[in-house]
Image (cartoon, rainbow, N blue to C red; front, top):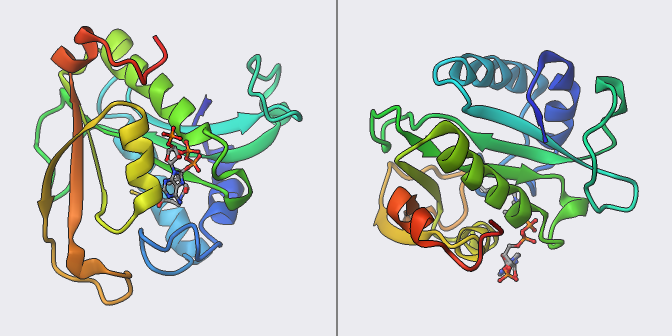
Length: 195
Ligand SMILES: CC(C)(COP(=O)(O)OP(=O)(O)OC[C@H]1O[C@@H](n2cnc3c(N)ncnc32)[C@H](O)[C@@H]1OP(=O)(O)O)[C@@H](O)C(=O)NCCC(=O)NCCS
């Protein structure tokens, strides 16, 4: 994983051009202009708390991850965007010690354990390197794949809540779910998380 930078904008545009990837996020593909705006928001949010932010995930040709690339232009096969910004937004606490985990992978890399592997690495980073008190994650209740990742990395279900229904999103009436991992959970050790 490498920190998100302006050189990655084209990859973010590619990622958000697949409506299936954004099915439970915006319910449709995003235009380039929309991605340019979200890229700028991400870069700004990444500057607010040292160590938090966004990472682009790459795999080696055999898909096994591996050593960091020698040069930025040699980043390998693009897998997706991993997110670990400070909590923000209307349904999240205004507390810089709380972090919001998220992920979005290109479809050809789904179901290979990559989101779980990358999320485990970001949990370790949040607690052991940045020193966060809690990591939360929010997704649509209907987003089974995303919930599978959160459960696989040892996060626990906290609540279901109901933001205003967006007609573009499938099964929005089921609401959103929130999961968490607290520092105490992290320190107690979670077998699912590679330590
Ligand atoms: C959600 C997403 C990142 C999952 O990535 P992934 O790399 O396929 O996930 P993993 O392979 O790590 O799977 C994690 C767990 O979920 C389970 N899982 C994956 N897909 C599943 C599915 N369709 N149904 C049920 N469980 C599923 C896996 O079995 C695994 O659990 P296990 O470790 O107990 O076997 C990917 O589908 C994606 O990018 N979706 C679109 C973007 C999105 O919705 N992001 C979340 C928005 S909040």
